[in-house]
Image (cartoon, rainbow, N blue to C red; front, side):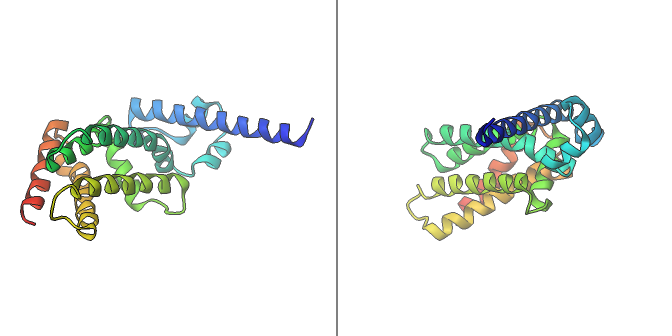
Length: 200
Protein backbone atom coordinates (compact mmCIF):
# COMPACT_ATOMS: atom_id res chain seq x y z
CA UNK A 1 0.00 0.00 0.00
CA UNK A 2 1.32 3.44 -0.89
CA UNK A 3 2.12 6.08 1.70
CA UNK A 4 -0.46 8.40 0.14
CA UNK A 5 -3.20 5.81 0.62
CA UNK A 6 -2.17 5.33 4.26
CA UNK A 7 -2.25 9.08 4.89
CA UNK A 8 -5.64 9.38 3.23
CA UNK A 9 -7.07 6.55 5.34
CA UNK A 10 -5.57 8.03 8.50
CA UNK A 11 -7.02 11.46 7.72
CA UNK A 12 -10.40 9.91 6.94
CA UNK A 13 -10.35 8.03 10.27
CA UNK A 14 -9.44 11.23 12.12
CA UNK A 15 -12.29 13.10 10.43
CA UNK A 16 -14.75 10.33 11.29
CA UNK A 17 -13.67 10.38 14.94
CA UNK A 18 -14.00 14.17 15.04
CA UNK A 19 -17.51 13.93 13.60
CA UNK A 20 -18.51 11.26 16.16
CA UNK A 21 -17.09 13.30 19.03
CA UNK A 22 -18.82 16.47 17.83
CA UNK A 23 -22.14 14.67 17.40
CA UNK A 24 -21.89 12.99 20.81
CA UNK A 25 -21.00 16.23 22.57
CA UNK A 26 -23.79 18.09 20.78
CA UNK A 27 -26.38 15.49 21.76
CA UNK A 28 -25.32 15.25 25.40
CA UNK A 29 -24.96 19.02 25.87
CA UNK A 30 -28.41 19.55 24.35
CA UNK A 31 -29.97 16.84 26.51
CA UNK A 32 -28.37 17.69 29.85
CA UNK A 33 -26.41 20.96 29.62
CA UNK A 34 -22.65 21.19 29.74
CA UNK A 35 -22.41 21.16 33.55
CA UNK A 36 -24.16 17.78 33.83
CA UNK A 37 -22.09 15.96 31.20
CA UNK A 38 -18.69 14.35 31.69
CA UNK A 39 -15.97 13.86 29.11
CA UNK A 40 -16.22 10.12 29.85
CA UNK A 41 -19.88 10.14 28.76
CA UNK A 42 -18.98 11.96 25.55
CA UNK A 43 -16.15 9.52 24.82
CA UNK A 44 -18.44 6.52 25.42
CA UNK A 45 -21.19 7.87 23.16
CA UNK A 46 -18.63 8.69 20.46
CA UNK A 47 -17.11 5.20 20.87
CA UNK A 48 -13.59 6.53 21.46
CA UNK A 49 -11.24 6.43 24.40
CA UNK A 50 -10.92 9.48 26.64
CA UNK A 51 -7.30 9.80 25.54
CA UNK A 52 -8.46 10.05 21.94
CA UNK A 53 -11.13 12.56 22.93
CA UNK A 54 -8.49 14.82 24.48
CA UNK A 55 -6.55 14.87 21.21
CA UNK A 56 -9.49 16.79 19.71
CA UNK A 57 -10.45 18.92 22.72
CA UNK A 58 -8.69 19.19 26.08
CA UNK A 59 -11.70 20.36 28.12
CA UNK A 60 -15.48 20.37 28.08
CA UNK A 61 -15.28 24.08 27.29
CA UNK A 62 -13.29 23.32 24.14
CA UNK A 63 -15.82 20.63 23.22
CA UNK A 64 -18.60 23.17 23.57
CA UNK A 65 -16.70 25.59 21.33
CA UNK A 66 -16.28 22.79 18.80
CA UNK A 67 -20.02 22.11 18.83
CA UNK A 68 -21.28 25.69 18.96
CA UNK A 69 -18.93 27.37 16.50
CA UNK A 70 -20.70 25.78 13.53
CA UNK A 71 -24.11 26.89 14.86
CA UNK A 72 -22.93 30.46 15.44
CA UNK A 73 -21.31 30.63 12.00
CA UNK A 74 -24.60 29.51 10.44
CA UNK A 75 -26.51 32.08 12.51
CA UNK A 76 -24.16 34.83 11.37
CA UNK A 77 -24.55 33.82 7.74
CA UNK A 78 -28.33 33.92 8.11
CA UNK A 79 -28.17 37.33 9.80
CA UNK A 80 -25.96 38.79 7.07
CA UNK A 81 -28.41 37.62 4.41
CA UNK A 82 -31.39 39.14 6.24
CA UNK A 83 -29.62 42.43 7.00
CA UNK A 84 -28.70 42.89 3.34
CA UNK A 85 -32.38 43.34 2.49
CA UNK A 86 -33.01 46.10 5.07
CA UNK A 87 -32.09 49.76 4.56
CA UNK A 88 -32.60 51.22 8.07
CA UNK A 89 -29.30 50.77 9.97
CA UNK A 90 -30.85 49.84 13.34
CA UNK A 91 -33.32 47.40 11.77
CA UNK A 92 -30.49 45.91 9.69
CA UNK A 93 -28.28 45.53 12.77
CA UNK A 94 -31.04 43.73 14.63
CA UNK A 95 -31.68 41.48 11.62
CA UNK A 96 -27.97 40.62 11.72
CA UNK A 97 -27.92 39.95 15.47
CA UNK A 98 -31.27 38.21 15.96
CA UNK A 99 -30.16 34.77 14.67
CA UNK A 100 -27.12 34.92 16.96
CA UNK A 101 -29.31 35.73 19.96
CA UNK A 102 -31.62 32.84 19.01
CA UNK A 103 -28.64 30.50 18.66
CA UNK A 104 -27.35 31.50 22.08
CA UNK A 105 -30.70 30.76 23.75
CA UNK A 106 -31.27 27.26 22.37
CA UNK A 107 -29.82 25.94 25.63
CA UNK A 108 -29.29 28.89 27.99
CA UNK A 109 -26.57 27.43 30.21
CA UNK A 110 -24.61 26.18 27.19
CA UNK A 111 -24.98 29.59 25.54
CA UNK A 112 -23.60 31.40 28.58
CA UNK A 113 -20.69 28.96 28.97
CA UNK A 114 -19.91 29.34 25.26
CA UNK A 115 -19.60 33.10 25.66
CA UNK A 116 -17.40 32.66 28.73
CA UNK A 117 -15.14 30.21 26.88
CA UNK A 118 -14.99 32.59 23.94
CA UNK A 119 -13.76 35.43 26.16
CA UNK A 120 -11.61 33.58 28.69
CA UNK A 121 -10.64 30.36 26.90
CA UNK A 122 -7.16 29.33 25.84
CA UNK A 123 -6.26 31.61 22.93
CA UNK A 124 -3.90 28.97 21.52
CA UNK A 125 -6.74 26.45 21.11
CA UNK A 126 -8.02 26.10 17.55
CA UNK A 127 -11.68 25.99 18.65
CA UNK A 128 -11.22 29.20 20.64
CA UNK A 129 -9.54 30.85 17.65
CA UNK A 130 -12.47 29.81 15.45
CA UNK A 131 -14.91 31.38 17.93
CA UNK A 132 -12.97 34.62 17.88
CA UNK A 133 -13.04 34.58 14.08
CA UNK A 134 -16.85 34.44 14.29
CA UNK A 135 -16.79 37.46 16.60
CA UNK A 136 -14.51 39.31 14.18
CA UNK A 137 -16.76 38.43 11.24
CA UNK A 138 -19.80 39.65 13.20
CA UNK A 139 -18.06 42.94 13.91
CA UNK A 140 -17.07 43.30 10.24
CA UNK A 141 -20.69 42.74 9.18
CA UNK A 142 -21.82 45.24 11.82
CA UNK A 143 -19.32 47.84 10.62
CA UNK A 144 -20.48 47.34 7.03
CA UNK A 145 -24.05 48.15 8.08
CA UNK A 146 -22.93 51.19 10.06
CA UNK A 147 -20.95 52.50 7.09
CA UNK A 148 -24.21 52.78 5.15
CA UNK A 149 -24.92 55.89 7.24
CA UNK A 150 -23.80 59.13 5.59
CA UNK A 151 -21.61 60.38 8.44
CA UNK A 152 -19.91 57.19 9.63
CA UNK A 153 -16.21 56.98 8.78
CA UNK A 154 -14.19 53.77 8.74
CA UNK A 155 -12.59 54.14 12.19
CA UNK A 156 -15.91 55.10 13.78
CA UNK A 157 -17.64 52.12 12.16
CA UNK A 158 -15.04 49.69 13.53
CA UNK A 159 -15.24 51.17 17.04
CA UNK A 160 -19.03 51.22 17.03
CA UNK A 161 -19.09 47.62 15.82
CA UNK A 162 -16.99 46.54 18.82
CA UNK A 163 -19.39 48.36 21.14
CA UNK A 164 -22.40 46.72 19.47
CA UNK A 165 -20.70 43.34 19.88
CA UNK A 166 -20.05 44.02 23.56
CA UNK A 167 -23.67 45.08 24.09
CA UNK A 168 -24.96 41.86 22.57
CA UNK A 169 -22.57 39.51 24.36
CA UNK A 170 -22.95 41.16 27.78
CA UNK A 171 -26.73 41.21 27.46
CA UNK A 172 -26.81 37.51 26.54
CA UNK A 173 -24.37 36.43 29.26
CA UNK A 174 -25.57 38.52 32.21
CA UNK A 175 -26.99 36.43 35.07
CA UNK A 176 -29.83 38.90 35.53
CA UNK A 177 -31.04 38.10 31.99
CA UNK A 178 -31.15 34.31 32.31
CA UNK A 179 -34.95 34.28 32.42
CA UNK A 180 -35.47 36.58 29.45
CA UNK A 181 -36.95 35.27 26.21
CA UNK A 182 -35.35 35.78 22.82
CA UNK A 183 -37.82 38.61 22.11
CA UNK A 184 -37.01 40.32 25.41
CA UNK A 185 -33.26 40.05 24.82
CA UNK A 186 -33.72 41.32 21.27
CA UNK A 187 -35.64 44.35 22.55
CA UNK A 188 -33.05 45.06 25.26
CA UNK A 189 -30.19 44.90 22.73
CA UNK A 190 -32.16 47.07 20.30
CA UNK A 191 -32.75 49.76 22.94
CA UNK A 192 -29.07 49.88 23.88
CA UNK A 193 -27.86 50.04 20.29
CA UNK A 194 -30.54 52.60 19.45
CA UNK A 195 -29.31 54.80 22.29
CA UNK A 196 -25.72 54.41 21.10
CA UNK A 197 -26.58 55.44 17.56
CA UNK A 198 -28.81 58.32 18.65
CA UNK A 199 -26.04 59.85 20.76
CA UNK A 200 -23.48 60.03 18.00
